[in-house]
Amino acid sequence: VTRRSRWGDVDPEAVRALYDDYAHHLDRGEFDRWLELFTDDATYRAVARENHERGLPLATIRCDSRDMLADRIDAVVETQFYARRLIRHFTSALRPAGRDGPALATTANFLVVETLVDEGSQVHSVGEYHDVVVADGDALRFAAKVAIYDAPLVPTSLVVPL
Amino acid sequence: MQTIWPNLIVQQQSNTLATPPARHAGPRRVRAPWTYFGYTDDDEAMHLRRLRQANLMGPAGLVSIDDSEVMRLAQIGARAGQGRTALVEMGGLDRDDTDHMVTEAAIRAFYDHYFRVMDLPDDVEHAGDGASR
Image (cartoon, rainbow over all chains, first blue to last red):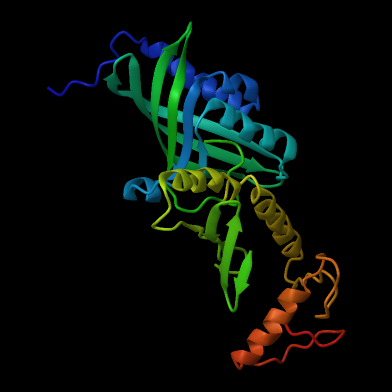
């Protein structure tokens, strides 16, 4: 019998709630609350599977701290021009992938559906998260998030993080 | 940004180096495969700097998102007329130098030269000075 990696002392429902909050706040544009889901020194990357599999370090979005992530959000909200859109994140197959001390590695699938003005909803990207979740104060937060998207082509642009 | 005839673009944005060529993929689609590069004798600090500044470019680029989005909207506008051919005449039809960038004279001049070098038939004449295609 193969046993799944253990959740250990981490409550799986709390981890699922973290992922649900992540999608909820991103999709509603509640970026301040979304940023609160990361630790101060969290890293975030959105990377093409093509690069990930070859071990190439280039990421489409690379933030080496929550402040860098906040800068990117500031650009999305304040300075960038892009067509109005609705985004929905769907997360599934959340699993514990290992422990490193108090940190819990997790994997999950993601699907992002994008709806542009006057167009039907379309799949923007689909892929897999490779994350690290830690207890930070009274909450679980992401210490690292890597969103590996499967298709090498991004439809026009990636505005809202995966 | 340096363009090298006929289709090589080499770009430097801060310390990020890339070739962002546009490849036509039919009448409604352009593919832009970005290739980033550095130098083998870059030290770790420069390597990391280039990777971080890559945030400026590409499909999520803090600088380039606007470009992709505007081009997409222009594309939608151009194909709006069903069964008709759309021609975008930014800056008119000539190929003269201007003291501003709101013109596609450089693109018209490019294709004029391209057709001549490739010995392609130039049988589509438009109004104005006869700019081709």
